[in-house]
Length: 492
Image 1 (cartoon, rainbow, N blue to C red):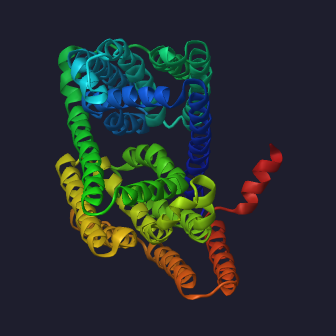
Image 2 (tube, rainbow, N blue to C red):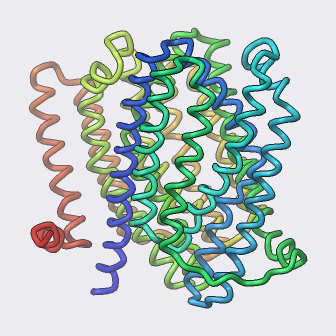
């Protein structure tokens, strides 16, 4: 029994650490947005947003997904405890990072007039984009260090780097906005990138690698799989953005601009509320999975444990989200957005299924089957887009929430079929049990909201929330002793 406890504990540790980092980053973003609004106004915020969106577009294309794809190779090298392999992999990755940074600089300089014209309607900001091209060097280098920390599972340093990076970026930017107003936007973006690089460099110094000589021929040979996987991830990122844009365009064309706003606001609440779970999964689960992917029994056990804890955490988070949706809309938005309530509440039913899709998707990614991963992602995205369009056409915003649940249900079945056939994997009975309990509790709660009158709805909802949370706490304690967690806090 000790091994499962240790494994569950590792998953929970990562979730709590990076969930906390996510919350902190959200707070930093809110403070920065408020300060920017006060210091440089709406015009300054608009300029800042347009410049960053242009840079992010170039970065998405020219980064080739290297940072994400390299995690798999670095994790495997780290798990092997082969120092030569680790040093060689890192040297190859470092060279690829420099090449993508150079590619980003060249692309930004070449397309700066086009970026300016597209974003601002003229070429007046061409020089600004050229100056901002230097951020690709700082961004690539700091991103490379974060990838190294993630691949070697230095969770403590990675979390600290994210937190200090956010603080330093805020401290650097605000004085520039205060003294130079809107003219401080470009210098603030550059110096923030530089400050983040310095922070990452500090944490890089905590991991010591002896230099190793790697020829350029070896670099291209060993780097080819990293680039191939990275290109697949880049295409998927572009596809996801295209699908999101297509849906919004469809809503705008067949519905109203107000519906677009309500859908976007509802999505922001759902994604923000459960974001810590998916952030932790992306940050820690993939490196751990990549490290054991060559051992069938270990990776299958890990996938089931990850799925169980994801469902347990989401089971608590989602029942609270479902019952507090009207309050959250009023606090985070305004009464004008109450029309998004039904969409949010039905969309909540899709989140446990989405969690399982993510857990399964990383298996194909860790296995290095790029073509299969790309094919599966394309099909899954098209399923979601197709269902969303059909259900919005017939049932409006509420239909969008229902369609998410149906499309993710089909996606889970599709992914399970692929993994069973390709890798002889299937979820344990425990995963299906947790999924069933979570779904039933959410459906019952939703039925209360729609069919019970006030004030009885509050009473029944309260009972359902207490029962659901009690069940998932029991399941959590069955895997990770709550007493041991309390004892650790007492010792601190």
